Length: 638
Image (cartoon, rainbow, N blue to C red; front, side, top):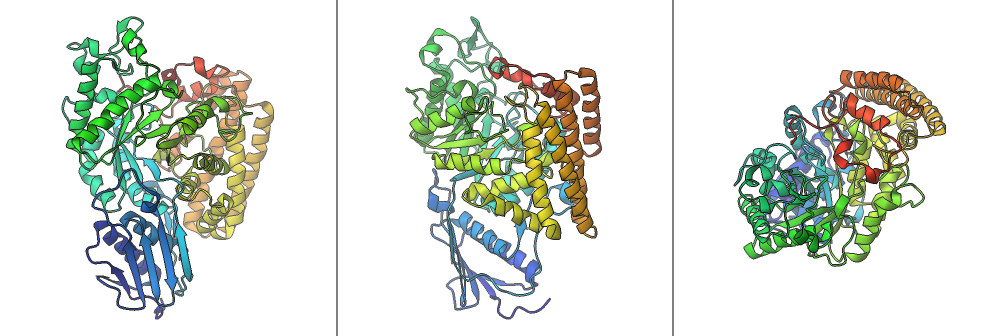
């Protein structure tokens, strides 16, 4: 490789630089060496002249400032003939500046370095033939203050197998490494897979407990925020441990005190509430690394029907009472922790008498959201019901709000939904209405199948105003080179195929099958995708990584066509034939279960029973379907 005589020779940090700034310099050094062969010196102190890359921060912090401010994650890139400055509002933002500068030089961070990426590659690091960074100043500001991902193992609707949990842990470090490259800043961790055994009375025995020593340092050196909790109210007040001694602490359903952890505790009982809050405070005191506590009700809950609880108001208001009690206790104890809660199902309706403090982050979720059109389209069945909470809370609540995006919904049976333009339009909708946080429920198992979707989520969560068409083309150019335009057409066609022809009108699990016309149109789109993949393979025949990726995309297309068959057979009510096609789809998934294409094959997220439920449970009013009845229970669950 040629010698870069015009390239800076040093990376300069300010004296007293933080661990995050040091990591930013190390990352810049590491990638520039790969790209140029040059090993830049890293030193601390004042700049000494030209031919330097200076990394600096505007506000050095010992611990994160919460709630976040826009300037915390803003950054600048300044390139002049004399040198380069990479400036961040904080150390985390300075790291963003480093990655953004490397992107300008041609790097692309396509996916985390999961094991199933070994044969296809997870990032693009070009070998430069010259040093010609673009002159000028570029300023970047985040569209959302909190840009989150979910580390698992639970994604919100039940436990997973021990084997899946172990695999999830082994891959989490790779997700942590990928996230700041896309300017994501919060990683959510679950305390304990819901429905598994209850926590011990005081501490320990939970998912975060087992991994905190490994992952907290990795997150801290990147300046990322650590969010821990989940559907955890019952973890601190579990009926299995406390019901016999204190039955009055627990909720009443149909006139009887309930032992189910799904039943919300008696929020009108001051001793029960005080016990819950004191146990959470004790947990937070022994876990000072936690920045945001995810304080969620049990998933699919039932609220107590006793007279005193009902007198407190709606479920939304009762949840607010509990959340406010925790937030006030955190303040009294002087803990530097932010509280986050969720609005969905029974708590979706805004209560005029709500008591949520403005500094609590409230995520709004659309459980019944169908995905044939953007959520804000009122002409689509159930869109208005899904949209109403977003409209109501954004109009009335004077505090922090976040939007939850169900990128994982089709993961229940591994449908490869490519919501590209839809993702951009919905994120823009949330941003324009003042939502300050965005988070997807995600699962790593089928990242290859949804690689472009997750790539776009990372890019758009920081800069929602970016041109989504240009982002898709840029991704295809990095990933597929001379076949970029063919693959750009492929992905946009696949979006139409998977969104229009695989999605039910009302809801993923209970709506009517798509029409005969859309199934027929889907077959046309599938044929077009097949032709585009064939032509791309011809152009990229000598590129082993691209060829392997195209092979896997072909498998996903084959699976998609089997899903079209399932839609058609479900509409015709041919159960025997549907069973046969479902078996074929599962056989295909089993053959490729380790290729990053399918989710939890033969687990509770992808199996014959769930697939049959998906296609056969049709034509029902979603509001009349019990939430837990939509899923296949896991043997470890309650």
